[in-house]
Image 1 (cartoon, rainbow, N blue to C red):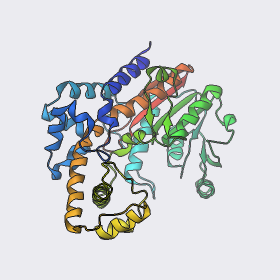
Image 2 (cartoon, rainbow, N blue to C red; image 1 turned 180 degrees about the vertical axis):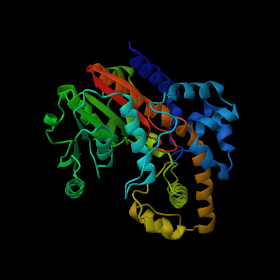
Image 3 (cartoon, rainbow, N blue to C red; image 1 turned 180 degrees about the horizontal axis):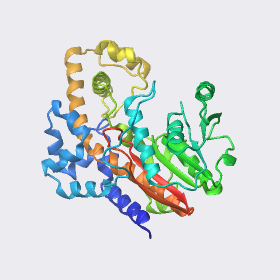
Image 4 (tube, rainbow, N blue to C red; image 1 turned 30 degrees about the horizontal axis):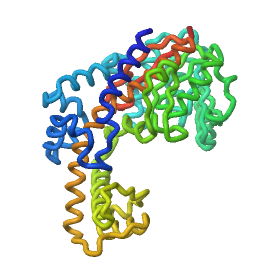
Length: 399
């Protein structure tokens, strides 16, 4: 058993042992069943003041460590999330091209730095996987001098990219391609290096599937959005991953993406209001039905959240074909929703603690798969989490 497989199995065992803490959803049921097994954690989370929850959500592991209530869990979380850095502590991004977001340009700078440190001498051409506007592909050409093929589904972006590259006389060429469906194996030759920054869900697993047969010289991939899969359940891509018996629903795969690094204050405030409204409605529907079970309100138009709580409840209850209580004190009902939101948010921190361990396991599953099909893989964090929380990167070289 190599080091990747061993870590994959150890992290799976850890996630199995603490599964109730990340599987059970306070949004659906309070008290949460796990509270009887971990009463100390329950008490600690329930005592968090409302004005401190956002800070704790941003770094739940630091909160747990500072609190000192569960040192064994705190130590295990640190152990199963520790990753080495693939780049220097500070990377100079250089002049930012027009139209590129500052944080995105920083990500590209760190990404290219990690690739260049890996000394890709066998690569004669780069392929930018799901290139978008091609900023990564252009950066790769400017750093290495090698031509780049940008694969992109959006025909408008392909046209604009080729016009721009022709005007700049830059050997970066855009091609229209649906990488999930098209046969693009001829693009992935033994002299090709593939770069993919935040390849969502099946976009990265499709690349690894093709690599089984095509074996490009080198791949640099930062996965993200693991929940973007077909079907409601995740199946590990590696043989080692399958052996662990660890499974996830698509909803559980959303956990790693819940970080709020990029969310504006306005967006966070809107989410709080939406959550309070949904939970307030749920309490009313439980009262009217006499059944202590959660009723999903379905997709809600933003305008409904911006309106009054009463108008929201009337519209949403009609949408789900459920009756509200005959008499409602709307001011008190809305207050109950906000109080419930605070409690649910506090108890949900148990799930937030496992965002990174779950992401690490899903990432290692991909690393193990590449090692199983004959690649030598180096992996770790390519940039600080403040730049992007999705900072796990693999550098795979054909053996």
